[in-house]
Structure formats: C-alpha cells, structure tokens
Length: 288
Ligand code: C2E
Ligand code: MG
Ligand code: MG
Ligand code: MG
View 1 (tube, rainbow, N blue to C red):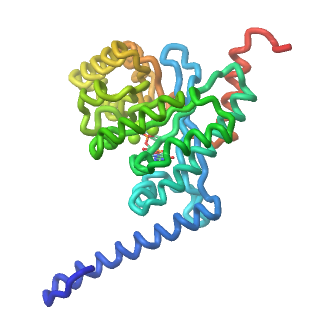
View 2 (cartoon, rainbow, N blue to C red; view 1 turned 135 degrees about the horizontal axis):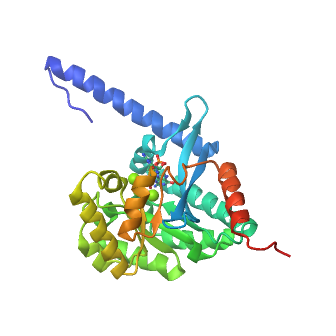
View 3 (cartoon, rainbow, N blue to C red; view 1 turned 45 degrees about the vertical axis):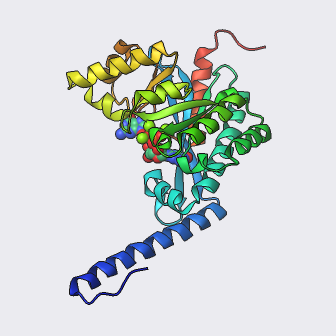
C-alpha cells in the first residue's frame, strides 16, 4: 500500500502508480477472460536442416486473438501472465493444444517426422505437479514423448538449481527433450551445460544478426557450435533472415536454422499447407 506524503510531486507519481496498477489489474482480468473465452491461438514456425532446408521441427508460439486489438504478440502478455500466476493455466492450454495439433500432423504427414518445441516459463516449472501434468497430457493426446521438446531459458537456473535439476530430470525420464532457448543472452554460464542434461541449444537471434559484421561474434558462434557438437547437442540458430546469414551459419556446422528466411510463424492451417508441399516433395514413390 502507498503511504501518504505531503509533497506535491508525489501526487503525480502516486497517480501514475495507480494508473499502472489499474492497467495491470485490467490485463489480469482480460487474460483470465481470454482463457475462458478461448481467445488464444498458436502459430507455428518451422525449424529446418541447415544444409537441405528440410523441415525437421516446429516451434509453437502463442498469440492472443483479441476481439478489438487484433492478434496480440506474446511479448505483450506473457510477463503479466507470469506475474499473476495465470501462466500455469495458459501454459497448460498451450501444451495441450500444441501436442494435440502435432499428433494430428504426424498422423497426416508421417514422412516429415516432425519434432515439436514448446516454450515453458520458469513459473510453470515451479509448479510441483508440472512433470505429472506433462505426462498426463502426453497420454491424453497420444503423442510420443520423444517428439516433444520444452524450451527453457537460462533464467530458470538462477532460483533453485537443485529443484530445477529435479524437474528437468523428471521430464527427460518421460522421454521429453529440453532445449536452452535464447542461448548467450542470459547469465550464460558454462556450468549450466556441465550440470544439466540438455538436448538442444538455440543460439539467440542477436548473435546471428551480428556475426556477419563482427568478427568477434562470428568466433563466439563458431565456438558455441563446436562446444555443442562435442557435447552431442542439437544446435539451432534463431532469427535467420537471409541467405547470407544461412550460409554463414552453415559454415559453422550448426545443424538447424529457424527464422523468417525459412518461414514466419503461421496459423495451423497455413503451416499444414507448407507440410503438405514438403511431404509431397520428399515422397520418392507413391504410397500404396
Ligand atoms: P522465442 O521462444 O525465442 O521465439 C522466437 C521469437 O522470434 C518469436 O517471436 C518469433 O516470431 C521471432 N522470430 C523468429 N524468426 C525471426 C526472424 O527471422 N527475425 C525476427 N526479427 N524475429 C524472428 P514471438 O512469437 O513474438 O515470441 C516472443 C517470445 O515470447 C518467444 O521467444 C518466447 O520467449 C515467448 N513465448 C511465445 N510463445 C510462448 C508460450 O506459449 N509460452 C511461453 N511461456 N512463452 C512464449
Ligand atoms: Mg522459443
Ligand atoms: Mg529464442
Ligand atoms: Mg527470444
């Protein structure tokens, strides 16, 4: 609660504090209603083989189909959802919807052998029932656990390393893979790679953007790729926007690329059309 003071300036400050508190409360109410009204949608972005450009996986990215504001990007509401605890319910919805969709795609396009990546916030991992929830959800949707990869960021390791290690081990025991998202932007510490069993590193877009103009960045990306290879990790370069960047990434030996060059995040229907095209292209002979 704000304390009363007699300074003139404070009234203005208190006023803006009040405004932002009201806005936060409104957002919280809106998000709760949005969940109840089923206003969230998932878009899907391909993750491709660097050399062949074949689609090997897909990342689910949440959007809010707002009745008046249109399609709202996650940057505008994930933070608020985390602060209010609503992220757990939203995360469950995202995971369920993504797994359901992937099961349908794998049945329809068996040749593509796609993997599914879903972003997971630290708040979700802190839920003591998280691992059980993922197990039930996989059973419900009938998705092979090895198809699912959860993307986490370095921030999750800051709070309670032992607890997080337990959660990640629990997930990997189910067969679920773990990817370290936005690698290099957080409190990157090699001890994370030493201490936690990971499957994938995603090199943050900012490195991909800078590597063509800064020699240092190029060297860092090359070193991350080498380290990842030595540790038997899959490596994905994020935010590849043009062919020059893809060539540069390819030269480092990084196995996978994601970015606007390969495909922008698209609705499930649009992504299915992309899969259809690539499925046909990879069929060497007609199925009987
Ligand atoms: P992220 O997981 O690192 O996802 C990649 C972001 O980069 C996406 O933004 C994607 O649209 C964007 N992107 C992909 N390729 C390119 C490119 O070539 N150039 C540029 N400029 N951008 C590119 P988006 O969809 O706005 O998501 C932002 C962040 O929101 C995600 O970053 C992730 O941290 C978070 N997020 C998204 N969906 C979820 C979710 O379901 N749950 C949670 N907890 N977080 C989510
Ligand atoms: Mg991600
Ligand atoms: Mg990322
Ligand atoms: Mg990011």
